[in-house]
Length: 100
Image 1 (tube, one colour):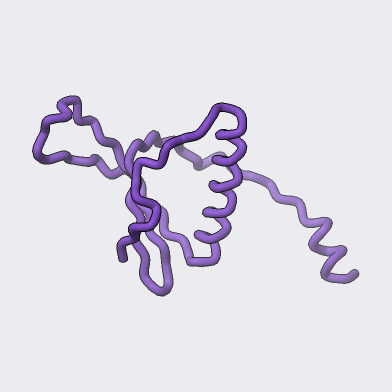
Image 2 (tube, rainbow, N blue to C red):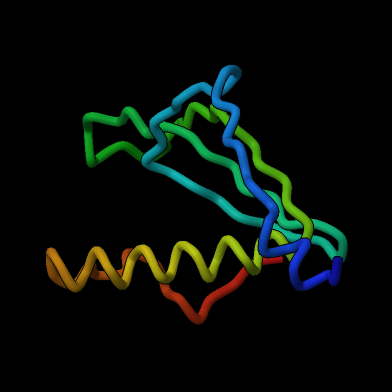
């Protein structure tokens, strides 16, 4: 059996028995040479005039750069499909600005 045939027959089973759902309206991303770290949390501020915000962090996802690249492609595709159906989503961040 060739590698091409073997890969075509690979079946993926999604096991959601330990999955949990968390809502996040804030995300922060940082990186090192070996990993990309994403922090997800909730901004519950009700007063826009506050001088300081406390973000309740709920999840940290750590990916290697290859998995992060695949995730970026998948997210971009999903967002393009969303915007085709519902209209443009304005970016709330400066896409050219990055942090280490």
